[in-house]
Structure formats: structure tokens, C-alpha cells
Length: 211
Image (cartoon, rainbow, N blue to C red; front, side):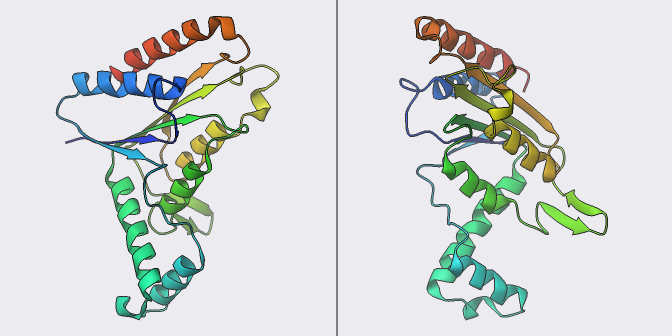
């Protein structure tokens, strides 16, 4: 059975967010096209994703030093255990769909927190004498993102940092099958915003049938 993670990072729902509207259209069509796939939704604004803080670093350090799990403090154990759950889920997934807005040329910080939880040496990549090598293969990623201006090409392309980072870190972990679906220009052309939204939703439905 194909396992799918539908990962959203937006405090707004599909009625207020163009990316969420396209994401909803995508996943509904995907479910119709792939009724036997196992789909799990993660709302990164609601998930418990520990930051890599002093407790995590201390807990990992104890385990790397060969100490038993009961040597961890209550806080260390809770955070390390939760991070292991997130990592195991990510590794076991075949397809990931990230749905984000563009915030300050990138994406909400909860996405970076999630990436920090799954980009783990020895698990999703490893270091070698010739450089880092990704350990995840035969997986697919789609990034759906709404942007107020046009960043896919033209003079603003170099200012787009979110999708470029997400693609780079996925490639770094070995995931090279990566697609992007971008709904752009609604803030720059507010009179055409509804047409832009409708076109994005239609593209999402079409892509869902082949993803």
C-alpha cells in the first residue's frame, strides 16, 4: 500500500488561502484516483514538533555515548521519542505533499522545524569521504505554494527561497522526484485573483491524477 503524507503549513483554511484551496482540490482528487492509498494529514501548526533545543541535544548525546534510554531526563525522553516518531513516519512514507504559503520569500517557520526533525544523519542521509549521500529513494514530493507576486521566473526568481530550499533538502536526503505547483500573482493583480485561484485549483486536480 502506498503511504502518503499531506503536510499543510498554513493557519488559514481553504476559504482564505489559495494554496490550501489548491491543496484540498489536489488531495480530494488524489483520493478518488487512488482509493487504496493510505493518506495521513499533518497540520504543522497543530502538530507537536520539538525544536532541536538543549534537551534534544543532551538526550541524543547520551544515547550516542551508549547510555540507556532510562538515563534521559523526562524532558529529554519526551522530546527525543516524539522526534523518533516523526522521523519514522517520514521514512516510511512514499509520497509527500507540502502545502505552504510564501511568507517573507520563504515559508512558515514550522516547515523548517519539521525539516530539522527529519533531516537526520544516519537516518535520511549519511556522511562519506566524498560528501553527504541521501538515504531515501523511490519517494516523491510535491510542493503547492501560493505567492502574491510572480517568482517562478523573471526578476524576482532569485528572491524565492522557500521552494528552492525544500527541493534542495529533499534532494540532499535522496528524494529527486520533486514537483512544484505554484499559484502566483493574486496580490499583484487583485482583479484577476479569482481566475488565478480557479486555474490553480484546476492544475491541482490534473496533477493529482498522475502524481
